[in-house]
Structure formats: structure tokens, C-alpha cells
Image (cartoon, rainbow over all chains, first blue to last red; front, side):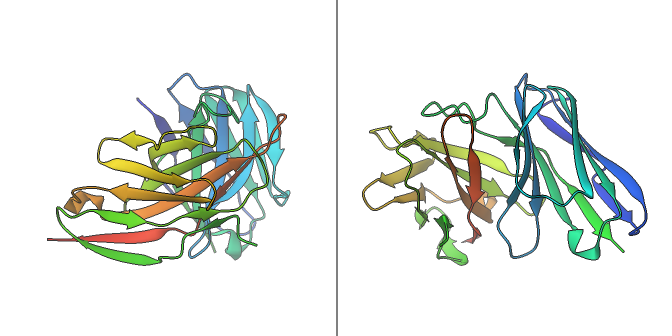
Length: 118
Length: 116
């Protein structure tokens, strides 16, 4: 495997279900990110991890719970979601976070998980 | 106020011609980074080009160049010799913040259609 992979690619869940999204990066990067992409809205940064520590949490509802067990893996645990949470969830990784002037935080994205909440 | 503004929701360009996609940004930081990404219909975001706020020369990557005008706070993407495979959504993004706290902000995107 190369680059950034995400599983599953598609997920349909009910509002009472619990599911998890998985992201794995094979680039040797130190930082990983979760984004939400809804129709007709800009990409929204949800969580940022650097060296397995959360460094950014943009007021995301607690029904989304991230986990970063090591620098190569990132999970997004989902529970009691709402229909408005239906979106494309994108994972990304970068060498570092905020490497000013060097482009070291250029993010490389996975293919995304298309989530539908019924 | 929008931090990243892409005023062109959709653009058409003839194959082999050049096209400019507009992006303006708003930040009070001295140090920031600007990125362009391409998102084909398959959904994956593909990094195209990066410009640091202190870079004096415009970034170039193959057929992509970034027209960086710092005083105007604009970072337009220029694609030369358009190809049919360039048809996609294009997003301008900015990283701002210092001292360990950073924000990554994306624009709403421009849909480019290359015509044969």
C-alpha cells in the first residue's frame, strides 16, 4: 500500500449505531488530520494529530471521537450521529504541522469515506 | 469574513489553453502558507502546489504555477496547456497561525471543465 488509505470507502449507518472510520498513512509522516466535506460547503478541519497528540480540535461535537494510536494510524469513532453528519470524511497526513515557510505541512489525502446517516 | 475566497464557482477552458483560477485570502499573520488542491470526481484531494508567505518567487510545479501577489493577498493558480484530465474541482487553502497553533482553511472551490 502506498500513500494514504481509508476504510471503509462507503458507510451507511443508523442514528443509533456505533462505527469507526480508519485511516492509515504509508508516508512516514508525523501529522494526521480528519476533515469533513459536505455538499456546497468548504472543507472543514475536524482534528489534527502531531506525533500522536491532538493539537487541534475545532469545536467538533462529541459524537465524533478521534483516536491516534501511532503516527501511521488514525481512527474516527462515530456514535449516535445525525442525518446532517452525512458527508465525505477525508483523512490526510503531512510531514509536520505548521512547518512555516517550508511546505512541510503539505497534506496528502486519502480517498475518503462517504458516510450516510439514516 | 471569508478567510479564503474563490469567486469563480465554475470555469470552462479549451483544451491546450491556459486558465487562471482566482484565490484571495485574508490573514493578519506574517507567516502563512498557501496551497492548491485538485479534487477529481473520484473524491481524492490531490496536492498541486505550495507557496510560503516569505517565498519571493512564484511557485511552479510542471504545468501549474502560483501567481502570488502578497500586497493584494491573492494566490491565483495558473494551469498552462490544459488537458481533459484537468477537469475537476480546485481548492485554494491557507495555513495560518504560529507558536504551535495552526488553522487550515479551505475555499469553496472552483469547478473547471476542459473542453475538447
